[in-house]
Image (cartoon, rainbow, N blue to C red; front, side):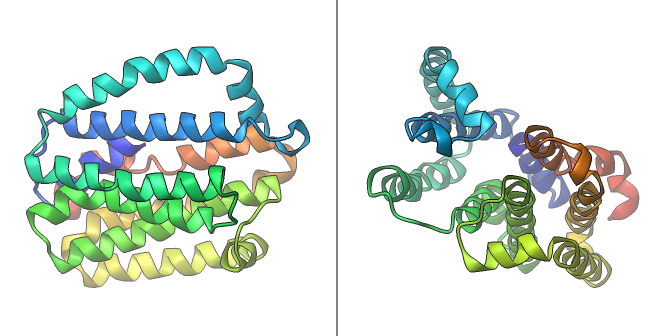
Length: 245
């Protein structure tokens, strides 16, 4: 998903980006995700979700994969434009702070918001550093809310929320996603430069809302997978980009 959105942002704003950039970011996101789940799996078994238990059962394999992935990311970053590489490396600092707060200091943080914000900034960095257009900032902010709603959808299935805003959205998910989709549609209409990204965001938000209809019949694990798959809407809109912009 990280690779798809990074490439889609760049294509939408006419930014030339080597293939190594989205691949490097996708691998880096996976490394962080796997490491976070491995750290979570050290908690009491009764507090773990299925994904944490899976990582715990296959911890050795994950550590080996991470060991290969880290130098691969560093090699790929060598082919990424210097400003983008520097921006992504600087984003490691808040990641370290997040890990320290959650796993070492055991602080309660608004994980859903932080994940959404960080992911959006990382995705939008190559485009922002190239053009720095207001439409791009608007898209990054809107995409950040979409990522948060994705986390809300998952928290809704797992009955878990780390802050009041997320807890409210969990209880009012359909209304929140509909309002967000309407806002995204308005951006697509009134900000032509952001139209492709806005339409992909709107489509993803509506798909997340539609998943609520499956809630009673789908397990939390499958719902999590479907919620992530709902964010792959750029793959649908990419062939239509020449007609959208």
